Amino acid sequence: MSSSKPVRIKSITEGHRLSGLPKPHHPLISIVDCADLKGNSSVTAAVFDFYMISLKRGCDKLIYGQQRYDFDEGVMAFIAPGQILRGEEGSTPPNLEGWMLFIDPAFFWGTSLAKKIKQYEYFGYAANEALFLSDKEEALINSIIDHIKQEYHTNIDKFSQDVIIAQLELLFAYVQRFYERQFITRKITNHKILERLEDVLASSFNKEDLLSKGLPTVGYIASELHISTKYLSSLLKQLTGQTTQQHIHEKLIEKAKEQLSTSDLSVSEIAYALGFEHAQSFSKLFKAKTKHSPLEFRQSFN
Image 1 (tube, rainbow, N blue to C red):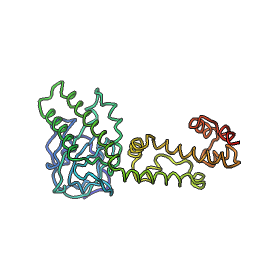
Image 2 (cartoon, one colour; image 1 turned 45 degrees about the vertical axis):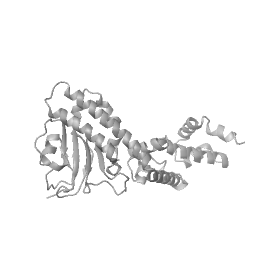
Image 3 (tube, helix red, strand yellow; image 1 turned 30 degrees about the vertical axis):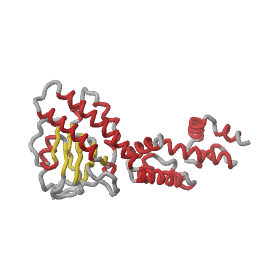
Image 4 (cartoon, helix red, strand yellow; image 1 turned 60 degrees about the horizontal axis):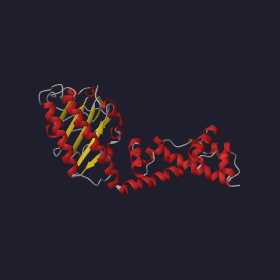
């Protein structure tokens, strides 16, 4: 009987067992060939206590969103511990190709990646924000995976972890580069996101919404755009050089300047109309962004 409640997979060994695979060669890191995955599973959702990186083809039964992508060959996805992966009940797709890399967080202890792994924002992207690779990029990624596989399949010695960590750092660096390429090559889609961002901000800053909901948050903006907060942040930094919060503040200051220069409302009244509970907070932000206090800005028009 299947269950919609996510199954928690606590170890790589357990992940192998549930997938019908033999025990991993190493308890803290494993690379699985998708062709070796065994059939019928009633698990439709799982939470992993380890990192999972995958490159797949023919993965139509996994939820990758409804967007159309330019690169339809290799598809990379990145799952951090505690995230949920959802799929469809039933057998593994017969045309599924690729691999999955499992890494227990303990493998990073005492290495350069112990903290650095947290800096890779793509582990926080949603499934429909996966990385789509060209043939050349896919071949490069596969060569790194082959080096990792070769290393942990040989006799483990005191150099093994350092060698694998070096390969993982190279992998993560290339993924960062390829994501930035994806932001650029998918200009039409990304520019539509920017247009929708402006529409969401404009709507959020109308008087009624500000009074009832307060200032829009990064989470609210991302949910309105149907993308994750981290993907939105990465996209905006690449395309505009600004974070989502900076875009919100930019629209806020634009509205404040409009009110200060065209109305007789007091600074406190403008602050309240813009969603601030305290005028001091508004004044502090306005001065930080413009180098002038609200009153100084208003006086410049008189």
